[in-house]
Amino acid sequence: MTFLTGPTAQFALARDPRFSYCLYVPEGHAPDGPPRPVVIAVHGTRRRAETLRNAFADFAERHNCVVLVPLFPAGITGPNDVDSYKLLSPAGFRADEVLLAMTEEAAARWHLRTDRFHLHGFSGGGQFAHRFAYLHPDRLASLSVGAPGRVTLLDPTRTWWHGTSDAKERFGIEVDPAALRDVPVQLVIGAQDTGSAELAPPDARGPAPVGSNRLERIHALHSNWREHGIDARLDTVPDTAHDHFAVLPVVQRFLAACLAR
Image (cartoon, rainbow, N blue to C red; front, side, top):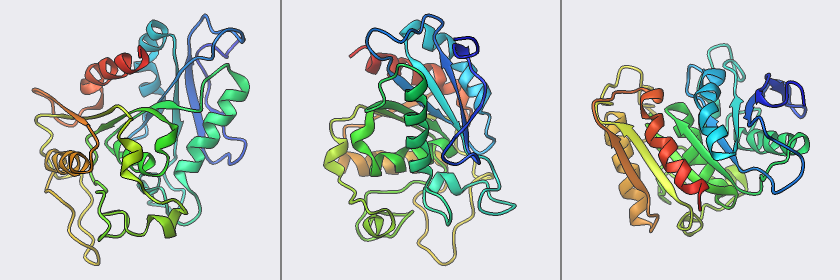
């Protein structure tokens, strides 16, 4: 098991080596006994994948779980592409299917439970996480969505990514809000996350996004989900702006409670 426990190397995805992932595997991992639960943490635009993985190291040891952090490199769909993975459906690849392939590949090497996993993402990773949940609610043991810069509402009158009216045509999957009602859901954001300088400009060809900053947008998502019977909690971290590592203690308390179920 040399190099396969503790903080691992970056592994290229065999199905598509453009993408890779790293893990934190508890030191006592063994191929017998019950499979370990998996927490997946998705990076933001700056793609600090290994730093994010390391921030979960003590958590993984303490809660006897494996943490998997995917890496969706910039430049996949063009030289200036930093956003494609967040929206799941650019030309050329499906980021949700890439993540599922990573879980299958990891389960072939480690003793993991991957039929359902715990999913967390912040900022760009929060965009990815809540859209992944629309398409694959049956794969989630819990969901934590942090400070997404753009939100997709459960709205049958607006097209992707603003709404969900054409999800069936794009993905071959009908979005079913009822399927998320049994998934523990956390929305999390810093109370001072009100800046707009790094937000993508509105698309002149599409509808205006809800809210002018991340705080307004996550409140809009929370209200939308509650209207559809999804009992999402909204955790607002005081004295915190747009800082993934500052909200991680709140995220990890939520994930710990979900793992203990």
